Length: 304
Image (cartoon, rainbow, N blue to C red; front, side, top):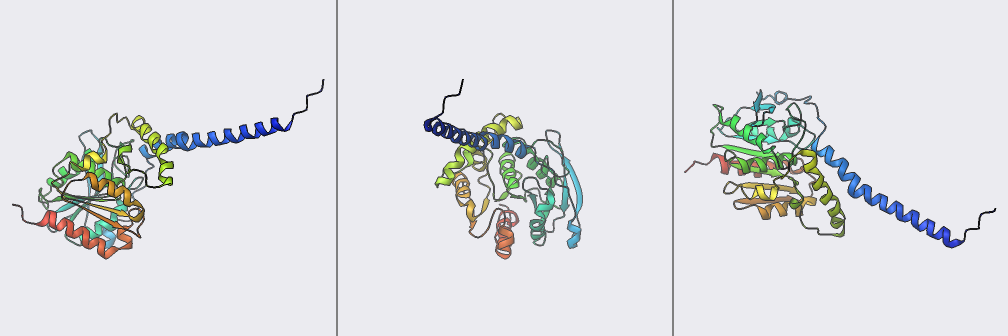
């Protein structure tokens, strides 16, 4: 028997079916496969080696330090002693370590501040395999501030925190958990939950909504944090201690979203020409002036 000759409708339908299958497959990869993959990468960041510079390369004395969190992790870092009785916890971004905040540490040190350059849990030389989002990473800041309070060169009432990207998030969460942190500079904080993202402002933003919904549903499964704390919740708990939010031009809506959730005293500085956490590199003098003036007012003024 010979096969019946297939007409043009058959080939049309087959082509449409193939195109539809490819489209559905791409949607699945974009909105299920990619969030699945990235949720693991973000919660299990690749460690970067602590290499190959130290504060000594700039003529600064420093100490190798370590301390333990309430959940039993040993955190490691460098401490540059204070010259003005105040100190700042400096935290890096994701998949980085203390070296990534070197420029910020140098800036603070030349203005008299002690600087604790610490590896966040699951980063650098600190313990931990999983990076929580809205979980016990806040305890890293609690432990760091307790360490600073124990030092003879630091007034326990003059401790601040500066963070970049992930480090900004961790400092916000930590400052909400401990009153030891008296002032926070958060440069480029992102999100721990879907709630932390601003409402879409463009068609492109809307295309990310399904991705973010799935990603932030998968993160708790990856991290084991059943009820993550949002930055929106934590940032509102910092007041009456001051917070300075910094963002690049493309981060405007995200930082305005965080700023709206924060309570006074609060300051927002958007640097239009800066990318993510590029403020110090694109406006070095102004960045230093604004950040140090913020900490000077919050930490160096006579206490009532």
